[in-house]
Length: 125
Image 1 (spheres, rainbow, N blue to C red):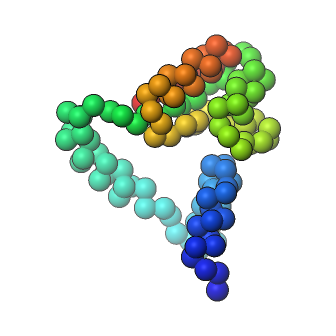
Image 2 (image 1 turned 180 degrees about the vertical axis):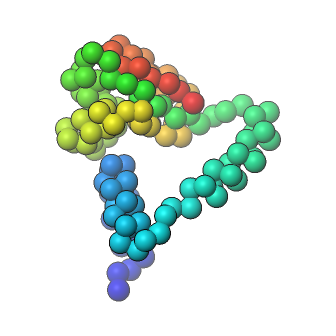
């Protein structure tokens, strides 16, 4: 049986797309679903309390590639470290998708500016 630390190391080295594919295959094989509805309910209940505090972590979400898809793919590869051409292309074509999660405001604004300059539609949440 595999060591838990080895599994965590393996998952830590995977891209978001690889992890997403793994979760889908895991759910199919074991006929289970991720517990996202429970997590969403917990986050929804905690959101009003957090609204009073200033947000310090932001998500950069690619809403659409626009007309210059190739330029957007190049910028996505530049922004997301370790992303190959195929993964970046799949990410851009699968929009809306999160590009960066839980980053500082400055990093989120810089990524948004680069993506919009390349012609993409981007939102920061």
